[in-house]
Image (cartoon, rainbow, N blue to C red; front, side, top):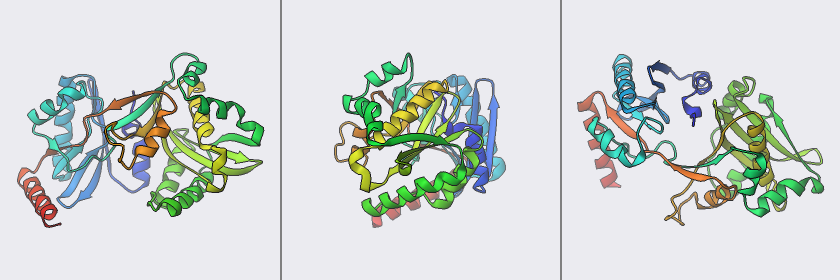
Length: 311
């Protein structure tokens, strides 16, 4: 599975946001890493990277990341080896042997929900809950239609719904400036698509998806609560999946889910929604730190632990 956050398209988004990006590759490995600021100083962050075909290739990628970090003055490299030539069950041992330690918190989800698009789309539909299939097949009878857009100006439709959802549920969405920049970078390039549900021509729900070489990532979605009874978000997501299948993509990544043994998790409701579309859970090794300036990194860790004790 190809990770969008390691793609050249995501590098362009980061550059459009004014960030410095490093892209490197070698035999069997590649990485995208972004320079970020941290209480320790400069950090080199590789979201869901590096990508490697084997443990040997992973070691070569680590050497390149370490060298890049030294050149740009980073205190440490923060990485998430989601596809690095070894399994999750051996990740803890292998990463610690290479001088890494778990980050204070995961940057990207450690668990994700993937729907494979193998076979006919009828097979994908068969894996969903009957309610989802029926809504997809019949919601047009209620005057609801769906369309896709690569026009960055239409990101305002999604932003309006995100504002409504934030006000209703008390959460803070990503900024309008951020999502507008993402849309301007990805949509004209065909690396992102906005899907809009409309009731008699008026938008009632929207979703933004990102595409890598073989995977569509369900990134942001929201709806008009006044039309909640129509459940347009469900057939909207199925439409997004059907379009991915038509484009020859192999997977749809519905993004983070809660652990099965955490019914109280803040993502529990989202998780139940995502699982209703069929698919399977994928676990990743999580977020790890590779110290480069070891004394400064040690001081940063000590200061962080002291702050946590005083809270």
